[in-house]
Length: 89
Image 1 (cartoon, rainbow, N blue to C red):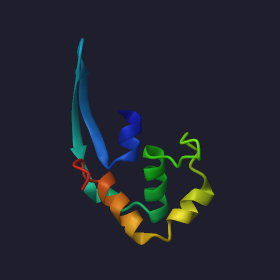
Image 2: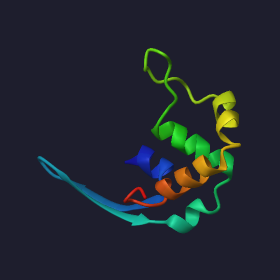
Image 3: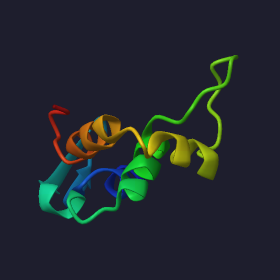
């Protein structure tokens, strides 16, 4: 929960862990994503979907990878929307 709240534009308001499931109360906060820099959007996206090597194993999100993604404004805006929309538009 902590990691996902650091990636998505959500705030965890409360949770309850039961024997076989949990309840989670979140507030979707799309306005917070508008204050993120493009670089922060790419870094957050990389934490959720890290780059992969030829063997399909996850690679670290490097500064070079972030800089490669930044010029693609369509990617950045789509990632920003998806990180701020629970439905993942």
